[in-house]
Structure formats: structure tokens, C-alpha cells
Length: 357
Image (tube, rainbow, N blue to C red; front, side):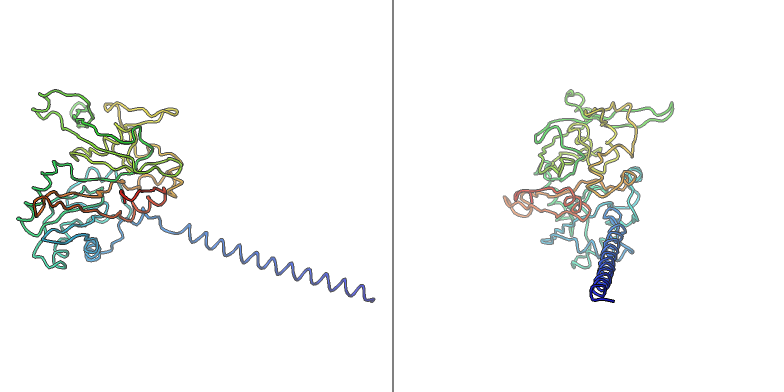
């Protein structure tokens, strides 16, 4: 065998060895990427971990950690989503808002533990967001503090609470003040059964108001930020009442942009072609699969089949208490976003100015 043949054979074996080494590296890299993808795929979605507590003790400890203010007998708690004040309420609305691994613990269940941790004999709930909201909950150590809180709220003319909501699209108005009213309509289901559903009206008589046939609804709102792709909006809103889920009703039927996760009034708005149309309340039907834009599912890492587990995105962000303990000294309390809302905030890439943070 001559030298040329030997060199060729060595070169051929070197090439084979290099190729095998490269294939091994590529295989390891692909395997590692597959393992990462698998890990991401198996990660639990934040909307499936809204209620992480395994016991009442764990729940109570978590609520105690969510105390954001404690002074002069006023305790402010940042309430988690899906927690009611006491048992036996919200049975009807729970059908519309399923929560993965939900618990039936209430604020009343946790109050003795929170009071003990803060060295109070007891605590009483004075003001709270409804079950399917998160945010500021006002607690008082005694009746004297409770009366002061209630008086401060009345001074604010029931307009002291500021909510943050996420809507399913950009609203038809970016900011404004509205003087409206809500009127209940009776809808017959059968010859013997009926139910009442509210609608917003822009005109009413003094007689209607005196007879309490309408509920006045004063609203201030402004868009804080639009999401990437303009799929959703973050809106700051104040409402004079929360009766009949007033904020949800206003967003859906007046701004034509339902709140993300709301399955009560979403069906009042339907998209026909490129236009959103208000549906007659007499003809509306509960539609848990009312269509969200596919871009929203993509941004939230969800499939349409998972839409029912999306929480209602309403957060009681701040409360002002005028002259609470001293004249002309107002107390303003702000509550940070809770984990599900905060995660959505990041996914949708909302941006806030310093005045809104």
C-alpha cells in the first residue's frame, strides 16, 4: 500500500469520526431542547393555580401576609380572587366563573387568625370587593373605627373606589364621565318562571327615580394602556354603585368591550363581520363560549376550550378615605395586583405611566 492510499484511508476515517461526533452533539442538543419544551408544556398555567391553598391554616396565613395597611385600628387586606365574605353567597354566579381547584374558605374563616396575628381581639369587614374581584378590603378593630370608615366613604359620595379592569378589546371611548341609570327588565322563561336582568338607560323620569325603578350609575373611566396587537385594554374606572355587576354591565353594553373573564354580560355583545352589535336583553342567552379573539388566547397561552377558567379581571386598585381620623387629612390606599392579574398584565404587555403605577 502506498503512502497516498494510507493518507486517504486516514482522512476517510477522520471524516466519519467527525460526522459521528457532530451527530452526537446535534442529538444531545435536540434532546435537551425537547426536554425544555416538555417542561414548558407541562408547566401549570397560572389560571389553574388561583387557589393554591391546601388547608384553612395555609389560607389564613396567606391572607395575613396580604395585609397592606395596619394603623389606628384600620386594617387593609388585599383580597384574592374568588373569595367571598361569608358562606352561602354567590351560588348563582359561581356557575359562570369556575375556578380550578377552588376552595370554599371565606374571609370570615380567616379573620380570627388575622386578628390574632395583628394583636386585635377581633376584626370586622367594613368594605370589600365582591367574590369574583380582587383587591382592597377594609377591616375595623371595633365599632368606633367602623363608623369612621363608613363616614369617610359617605364623604366621598360613594365615588372613592378605583378599579382596574382588562377588557377584551379597545373600547369605543378612551375616557369620559357618564351619568346613567340601570333599569331591571323582567324576562319570562316560562309561563310560571321569570327573571330580571338589568339594562343601562340614558334617560329616565323623576318619578322612576323616586319610585326606585332605576338605579343611578355615575361612571368615570379612562384607558390606561392597550395591549400588544391592541387585543385588550387596561381601563381605570370609578362607579357610584356595584349593584347588578354595574362595572361589567357598563363595559359590555356601553363601551362595547366586555371584561376579560366575564361570562355574565359578554353575550350582550356579538361580532358580526367587523362590527360589534348590542344584543337585545330579551333575546340574550348565557354563552360561556362567547368568542374571544384568537390573538387573546395566543397571548394568554390558552386554547378556546379553556376560556371558562379565565378569571374576571376586575381589581379594586385604590380607595380614598377623606378626613378619616383627622379633618382635611385624606388616606389613600393602593393594592398591588394579585398574581393572576399581574401575570395577564405582563402577557399583554401593558404599559403604565408613573401616575398610574
